Image (cartoon, rainbow, N blue to C red; front, side):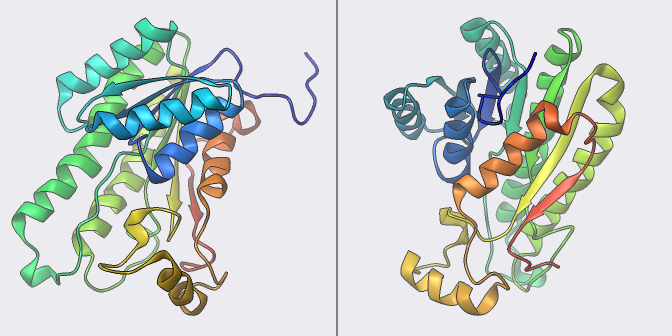
Length: 258
């Protein structure tokens, strides 16, 4: 079937986005909906999820919110079940839920921060993958995109060892899972954003204007990445145009880790 370059790529598809209430997750959810997908946004707090759903609805899209903690296996399984019940299937999953803890060197890294980073950023992705793959391989396959970070496998800076370790694990887990499950008809890839339009890129007490000034010095590009720019990479990896892209880790950081 011939399609025009601007035709919606995801009409009739269902996409699940964890961490979809704010920041990059919201931008990704809105981008999928704008291209025809039915979208489920998930997260621990219901209010921001409902706001994302409302934004999508006002733009003419279709979305639903399901509250879930990705660090709890049963909640993740219920999330996938709820998505399938609501829209009849699950074709695309974006594992974006994550937390940032930083500011301390390794010797003083609080154990509770380390555990939180592992529970949500690493175990949360593992549990999400397990529930998503279980459905997809029984229903004709699908595409999964994990949101990692340029901090980790690609770049290290002082004071964020725990976060970097957790995201390096996501990058490695993505590639291993991609090899394990491509024969199930499931393509698994990652994006690794740098500083982007998200509260995670703000230093304590820093305003967006102050961040913009700082990024002019710190980033080769001279600015943060926008939400739609990161979303565009996610949508590409989830689309048929990336049919032979398996186990990649696409860095979107304005050259910071080049």
